[in-house]
Amino acid sequence: MRILGTGSALPARRVTNEELTAFLDTSDEWIRTRTGIAERRVLNEESVLSLAREASLRALENAGLNADDIDMIIVSTAKGETVTPATANLLQGEIGAHCPAFDLNAACSGFLYALDLAQPYIDSGKAQRILITCAEAISRLCDWTDRSTCVLFGDGAGAAIVGAGEGLLATRLTSVPNLGALNAYHDPGNNPFQEHKHPASYLHMAGQEVFKFAVSTSSADLRAVAEAAGVGLAEIDFFVLHQANMRILEAVRTRLGQPKEKFPSNIARTGNTSSASVPILLDELNRSGALTPGMLIAMSAFGAGLTSGAALLRWA
Ligand code: ACO
Image 1: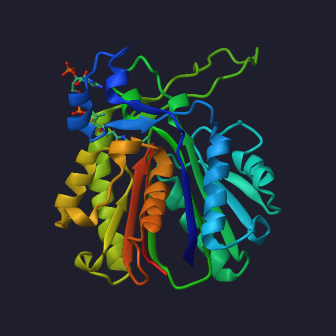
Image 2: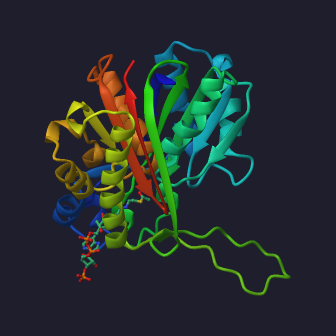
């Protein structure tokens, strides 16, 4: 399996750290030094669906394909446009595709989970081309009075179309149940027969616990995919990591003993866009011309679950 095209979309509204200080007890200096984030994009006119549509159409154009060429749509999202139908079904209507479509929720690891899921379909020939679109609006999940979470996130969508080819060399997924580290509850509904309902809640995160998990798991996952593919870490050209926190990226980089230039980052402009972050960064690299055929690219993401995923691919 290989990547045939990429696309991404960000909301127009830029929100700087300085703007957050108008209603939160925080500072540009705290956010920059603890996270590397200077600004993020937040939904205003857009919706999760409109971002998904824009990113998907760009990926189709980049791959030189039409919507009818797509055999399956997987949307990764923590909070889609609707509870049901799936955002993937709505996206299908928006782009005019005629194929199975469903949503996947593996939190920030969604892109890697989707890649892994797509591989047997492509390898077996059951599907020729699969559209993976990660569309996230964590701004809808955050409590905007909680300075420990809302400053970290941004909205956006990233997409990739995969098809047959010699590209994906290894993948690895992990999951360990940990409700306390990172969670948000749905609206429980008004079932009169259920006495004890957990109320709907905003995103809650035990920051330091997630930080430690992210660094140790991402480092282990990246080593594992490199080993599985028989590739030395030094041979890898780019490490495209989930843009959760600049300090996490730095800690992983140091553990792997790799130079800074191999760890591209857009977190200063985007904040943490959950599962969209890896495909957005991949699309930016692709469009900037930084990726040339034959390059080895390692990807790694981690998030609520706690889940993690990594992949090693040769750019084709
Ligand atoms: N502005 C100013 N002060 C703040 C802010 C803020 N925005 N947020 C927290 N603080 C304060 C805290 O209240 C605390 O104050 P106290 O010492 O008086 O109690 C102090 O800063 C230190 O707080 P810590 O939580 O210890 O700060 P830390 O250095 O751990 O940084 C952070 C917090 C940035 C959340 C960090 O733990 C982190 O990045 N964790 C990983 C989060 C992550 O990667 N999540 C993404 C993966 S999952 C996903 O993407 C959905």
